[in-house]
Length: 503
Image 1 (spheres, helix red, strand yellow):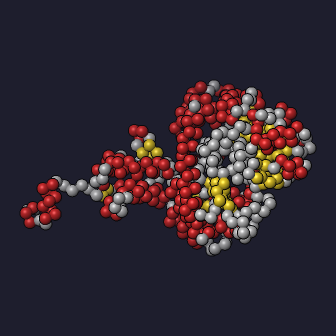
Image 2: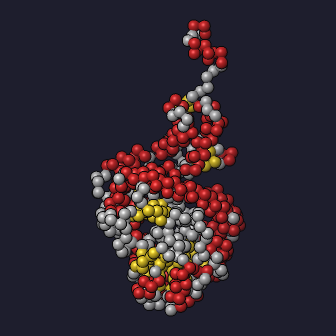
Image 3: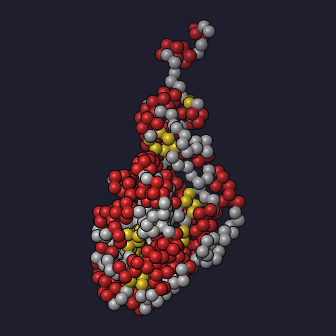
């Protein structure tokens, strides 16, 4: 072609060399579509959309930053910044020489979730029309949504797969044939030792490994305790009000009555506990669910006096490791070992699917609990116990916890900021620790308003739990919002939907 016949712009290209490319085969990206000054945000948004729509399934590798920068004709820093945002959101992760890989996707694509949500007639969700039944959490988990702000979920995308695989290979290499047989119903000696050391370091609990009973999570711990307590004539276990609906359901299905005891800014009211006449109480003292209140020193002393009269405390230490703006709170078990049955698990630290937890009981009940565990299932599966013990002893679990704290803090901050922006009339509770926030609205709001709000949110693709689910006595309307399992982007989107509904 004769260049002298081209346009002035063509001639300038010829003189200055080829114009940098502004498009890439990767996701058919075209920088002409990006807003001025917002290239990194635009690129991150395009990748998020592709992940949500299934164009980039989990395991997909993103282009190297240098390669994509060259294709799009932008600085490498723009690509690095976009990948950083995606990493903070939990969608991608760096794999060293393996590059940057997609590690998490939404439960459903935004388009599909919105379609399903808008196909549901207003107010038709059976989840919120009637009092919650025993299958309510299964039904909520199965409900389609593009943003899940349910409490109780850890960041499942952050599960330390590489560390788990290393530990599992190491454990398998050292096993002998007899290790694959029936073991001690109390749990493997390796995990009981590791748990005793973990609790000493992280919760101030001095326990002998022989005191540790490995169980299939807190749910099984409560079931075993219910069997043993009923065997000694205890039929009522008082609970905080509000408290976890799931915990109440486990107690009642196990045959125990669960009278409510009010919680105030200092924790459970011990005078009201005495008035119930219950011989045992289930508490979440380090981070009360759902209010986030920490049991203060005066109430702890009052509880100690209550136990001297024969009371038993069941301590559910469900997320004590996750704290951000306050010092650690000692476990009740650390000061009242003979009057506290202590339950913990890795459900909020690693994943609920592992079904691994532990129970430390007073000496008077330990033998009966071991028998109950033996006849329930002959003991937990040994291999996950041994792998978890290796993670605990190697320091990998503590490194994982430090990573989670940084990530969860960022997500909590994103939720608080979104609430300030979109729900300015809401009061936030329990922000200093945990994996969820409780928000309450004006006391003058109508009864049942929070279930109506939760139903409307679900119809628009956002899952939340109404505070009234977790209360036995009248409470101000509110919501319990989990932030650990959602990216900051999804959190902001979900809270914005709530703000629209409230307005």
